[in-house]
Length: 433
Image (cartoon, rainbow, N blue to C red; front, side):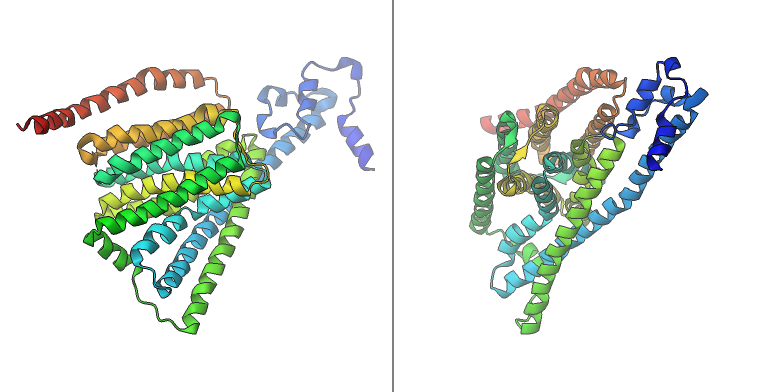
């Protein structure tokens, strides 16, 4: 019965009179071809014995759109569960560490630092183990671009951000170095387990260095800040220990559940829209997993803690490359495959974003509002490029030419001019004038 119905739909009454576009229409029936690419010209063919076929394909396109809209709530739910899980995990782990006698400073630099990057880590791990390498690498690369361009852009528009001297001398060069290292590791099209061990070892060394550096400087303001944030006394009772362990277990469970929902719904959306998983990872997932950094930095800007907003973003980006990609590559069965698109465009963009931080941060050790608008513009331009490229828009080459030959040179000139006062001031200090 079913075979008869299918035959009635697809079998023409006059096979000798097939119009040229029929083969194009039938090609749309193949399951490997996304229905989002359905041609409007072909869909206009509604006369003769093929009227039922065209209705069938319109129904398929409608079904694809419905599947997309039905999947979006699961993606949002996954993001919410993911962020909540990270918050609960950090809360429980911090209090257990306090009970164990660790100082609030060490807790802030280790548990909390890794905790804010936990959404990226769990999503990349889940995607790498499931074989969705594009989501795994797109999540990290997209998060790093999002953190600098959008988060610092928004925060510096709220209020100009102060840049600590240590960030300019140490952390930004480290960020540029690890971004270049990722570019080098992706040269052969794969981040292997050996590469992952190197990256993860770098994360451990960087964390150890931060702890020693903080103890060495012994800044009373920083110590007081961490004490205020994480030093709330917790009674060492059996009940409290059980509660905090429950927080940790519950946080981990929520992270696993949220990441699973997020990855599966993202893959479903990518397939239904006919776009790559890499684009989904670079945009939706990257923005979602960066919500903790966004919230922390925006709140810090409103409170006037302007140096924390910058340090949070730079530190998170370093952790993303070293810890998130490192551990994801270690636990992935065959390492993380790096697509040509990611290696040729997205990772170089991430490297360029890290590189441009240096001249922006040096100018007066401040991120001004105009620089914040510049960051925000570049994030919008980057996202627009991804959308135009994914939809194969015919105006993409015009967009590329405007960015390459107008916007980027104008930005370079503006940054160069803004550096002149600092260079003149430095020469005056050297000559003793």
